[in-house]
View 1 (cartoon, rainbow, N blue to C red):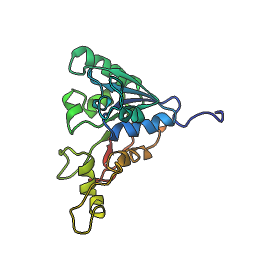
View 2 (view 1 turned 30 degrees about the horizontal axis):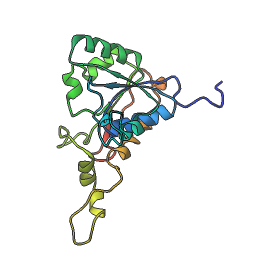
View 3 (view 1 turned 90 degrees about the vertical axis):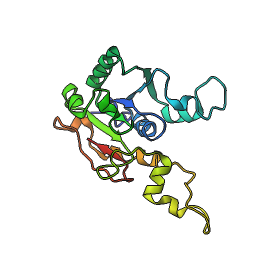
Length: 206
């Protein structure tokens, strides 16, 4: 029996291979719910550490507001030692989340088949701009998601072109969608599967 202070995802470890906004805002939700989120960054760090700084030589507010409640490590996944460490991190995790460009994780040598071989019970969330279809291999960013999803058509001036909304609904909005899958602890050995639309939910669970 759990106590009243037990969080929903307490005891779940998340390997967070995301960067910028759509992925970090998704994994932050998991951290708020009690998951142990381990953020894996390139040796140079997440690019947003240096973006929109209000103070010199410190992590930006943009980075810290999307990555609180996480632990961070840097890893060069292009080296053999880096691949060995990543393999062990996958083995020890319940959930793996990434938002690289299409095919990037495969090129690292970690295809879905390889990941499942390392850890058959892992839940793999791959956040992309487009699901299966003619745009599958296209990259996407905030403004692309807004344009393809149609929200830009409702913003702007009557006699002007469509405009992006001020709120980052393409990035942080999509972050809320992957977690409808069941907890990895309750699966029967295979990862949950959820479909993906072109701009909604803008993420795929394999």
